[in-house]
Length: 370
Image 1: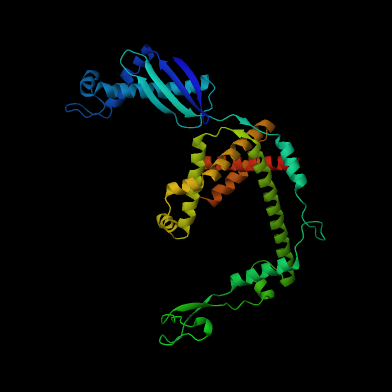
Image 2 (image 1 turned 120 degrees about the vertical axis):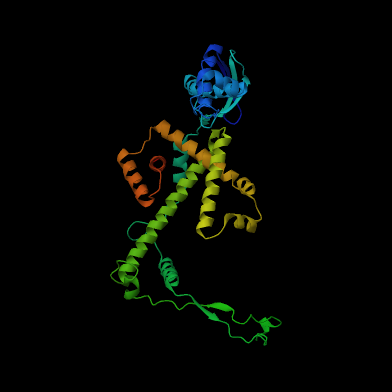
């Protein structure tokens, strides 16, 4: 088998080659037998038709096509392995020569893992962290929570627990609304309902106990304050991490394969459609409301998809260079949690997801330690 590999833009390659005539010819009987399993000929049981009868009933072009498919299906993995090609997409195969007792000519185009030139990511992380102002500290030495923040959170909770009351409007339909601001305004239709501002539930011990394992208002305030601190710390951490990876992405050089961008776009649209469906809406109606098509959305989200694809490649490369791997016990624990929460989840995909999440967390902690 003769093979040549040519690099193309966008991290694609073209493999051109030939499979020797005698090797290609060895697939003739196999291809004929496989095609014969689907052929129905009067007087013969299906799959039991003699070879000479099959030859006269199956076009030679169909036999040759099956031979080519079987030959390349067996030899393509060998080509990839022998030439150390990191293929990441399905091969696009075209046949350039196809005849009995002749070499099989072919061209294969596929995307490969791109070369990644990373900046000094440790220095980038160190610079971002050094330029990030520390949060204001409270009495416990951690992030502070003001009284105003605490009272706002409590008010939001009370509002969320308040019953919503709708009352029919009783304004007579034949009378104009009073008041200068409403002059010339038509009255609402009879029976139209309007929402009345809710009466907030009293914030007392009974109210907080109904929400969870809280002793009293003081206990609730203390625990809510702690939760707000944790949330602020998490938000600050995520902001710093985002800043670090954005700087690393901007300074990296990657010839991004189109297939990876398309995969990220598929993910974005899938999540979007799932969210809309869970809200009880049809995605097609949502698109009509936006006056957009699916293709319009793919264009709108393309930059986001490119950034996500680059980030995934960069994190993978950092993990490779720093030999960062997740703890096997943590993987098992995470997979178990996923399968318990999502009963229909595929175990293999759950494991891949768990490995990615845990590896990325270790990478971020490594960068933060700079």
